[in-house]
Length: 302
Image (spheres, rainbow, N blue to C red):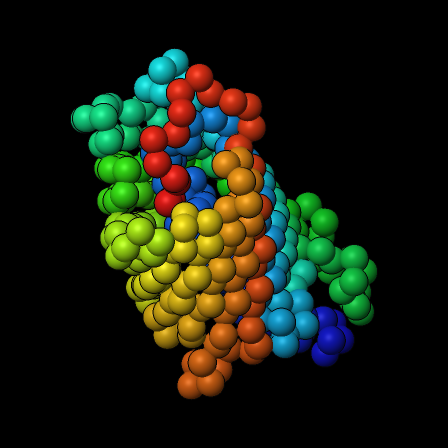
């Protein structure tokens, strides 16, 4: 192969380590379904969330993630179902996945509940070899059938909720599986562990504050920790900042346009000492479809 092909493959190999991990969203407090299936059906009506994340803008071929998730309660909100479509691209490596969710909720009081959830995940992965400059077009290492495959998996989660607080843990990728058709080291799904919590404190009639955390652990990889803190004005505007362990700072803003529509933006500033190439941008839109006979008791904080 020519040097260009070798460099391209090394580039892919470096990003493969990232691709085996679940995407990390800065606005995870409002996209909990992506990490915990027990969140399915937690909204009063059909909820649709779309997120687009562009990471490390200074690096050509840097990771981008687009996802659309929806979930809804069923039968007096005791059952919840949902699904998510996701597309990840990093260099010439791409992953497309679909997840299905189910949650069963036990009411503990008028304001508290406990949910158990399960998920099914199917991922199609591959390498875009159309732009590879091969010296030998018959190189078996880059055979079309050897550049793609499927990875099925399952997940589970638990979620304890109050109207102004939550505590959850999940294993969104419970099985340790790997692709058979690409180098085993490059495309592999390891077991992921997530722990997340948050609470809303009332400061006065106009202002509240909402701290939250997300802890991630993956075998043979550094632990991840996100700490975030929002200030909420009139239950309409969320202004926040966060810190991602050994990566950088995060600026966050959310706006509740009306009872059904919420929009958000996150800006990740990589710290120089961690040498991440450029900043990251994340856009979010959430819309609640259909009306429900019951009135929302309080604004939704997560």
